[in-house]
Length: 165
Image 1 (cartoon, one colour):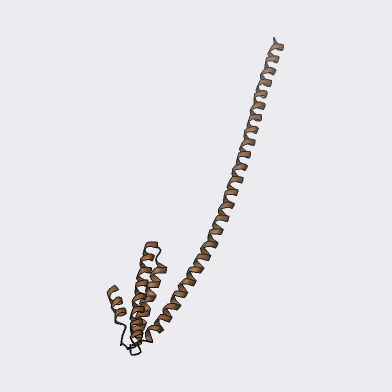
Image 2: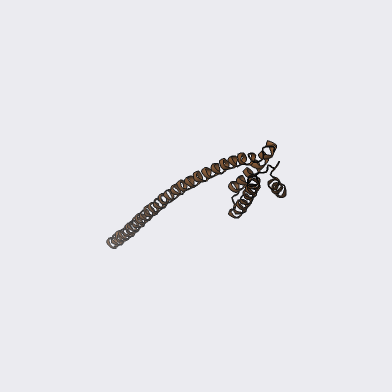
């Protein structure tokens, strides 16, 4: 009987140790799988971050190039408006210079409205206003230059400005 008891006790200990050993093996396998999954997830995240960095850096380059072109266009428009001021003064030598400045400032404000408006539809409307204004200025100055008569002021242009204000 004592021998049987010792045998059962040893079997019980082996069984307990065996289960504990199997549980540890299972836990180690699960931990290894979790580490592998975590490494794969980290690699995927690193890959996606790298793709996003590339995408955003390229978008930044395109935006910088587009904004540089836009700024160059804006400066060119302002230079042309400065030329227009001189072209307005020529056919109207008796016109007060401040009127030429008012016309110039109005055109500049229309250009600013185009460039500073984030809404594409509003930009389009501002471009149409600028085009109409330049046409009125051209018609006014061409009429004076074509008729070889000197008018005191560009009345259609000034009326157009008054009508918009």
